[in-house]
Image (cartoon, rainbow, N blue to C red; front, side):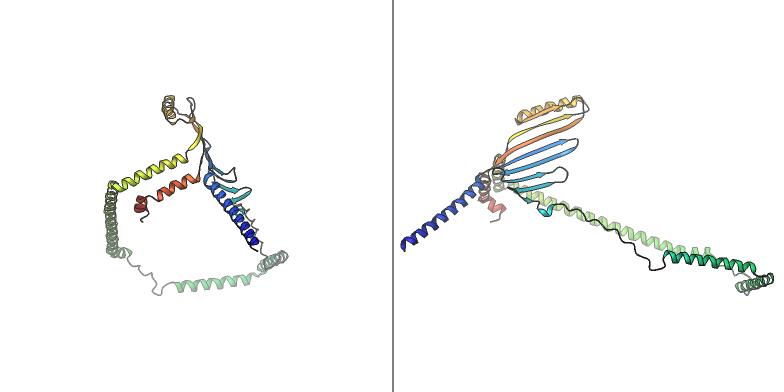
Length: 330
């Protein structure tokens, strides 16, 4: 019985040890296997093109970014794409169906044709009847129309037999002039008051902005002169240089081709570029073009950085007393 328990404990310990070993191995892989990056930037008359690619553990995990035109980001692990997912694929817009023509609830084409034929027949009948009317009846009808016209003209004419005099419109216009002047003066006074109010607000804002800028400048000068702040800035600057040293590119290559309208300006720019080329110490070719006005170039950077070094650097910054006091407020 005791041997069985000991054997069981032995196997449990072996399983726990294997699991702990696998976890430690994975943590070591994440911390010590560097992340490799490849940056390519190119410029020509067609435009700029920037591509960034980062890989980890023999391309086990990959992230690529392309900034030419519409930005594109792609992240994948092994054969599985994490971003963009299936929802990121563009779907074709659904075709809009043409609206169906509504059927008229009225007559059909045949009914309309019949209706037009009937109207034409009625018009012809009326026209014939008008020609068939006798001459005496026509004269009687004209006499009635003349009598009705005379009666209507008499009703329209005033009983006094003359036209009334219209009121003097010029006098009315003269009476309205003072009111118009008063309204114009009111509008001008209101506009002057509005302008004065706006100017007052502008002056107040300018004075407040000046006071705020002066206060900010005084606070900045006092902060720069503080010895603790100087020491903090010196510490952070040193850690920034160390971070740049960790992630610096190991390989740098490319070229730049340029040319101006004036060949003398091209030669002068080539001299300055050669001096900078000597200080940089990189494999970048300088190609001046004295015949054409052109500007193009290509830059390729390759490097790697371990996550452990970056985490160690950030942990040192976090543990600094000045950082906790001035920035984290602890």
